Image (tube, rainbow, N blue to C red; front, side, top):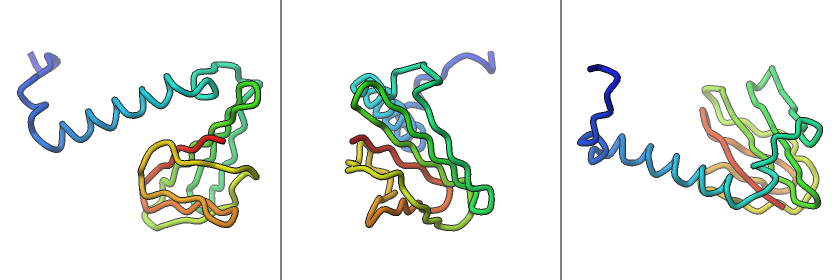
Length: 112
């Protein structure tokens, strides 16, 4: 019984906002080949253990995608891979002047 979905909870804001986020993430993945690719040869992961930040860059042909995660309790700023990045999902994470800036416990998604 505990494992059954309670569809009435979708109407409560904390659940509705999470559902909207999942739908947006699935749409971004569907629309960008670099995020759909399962080819591990087309993936680069850069971890900054001191800042608790992980950058994942994927590519498919000439298209690239960048996903940055901040697992820290504080805002963090790290060097971004070179490129002309455009935001794919509004998360309050930014790339400016070659730096990725992430609020605490956040992520960002960009494409070239």
